[in-house]
Length: 72
Image (cartoon, rainbow, N blue to C red; front, top):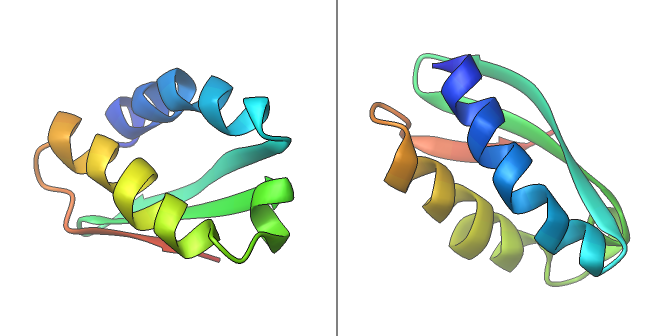
């Protein structure tokens, strides 16, 4: 599952980088994906919206068994 999540993150990373941010995969365990938003995304007030509507939606759509995505 971790490899599948990493592949989805690799595909969405350019969108975050275009706005001066980035994302790092920290862990995948028991259906919970832990990521770290960095750069502009790390301090952006809209980062939780990006996380839920962008990152989490893309991962859940492409990786069966993922329940949620959290930031660390």
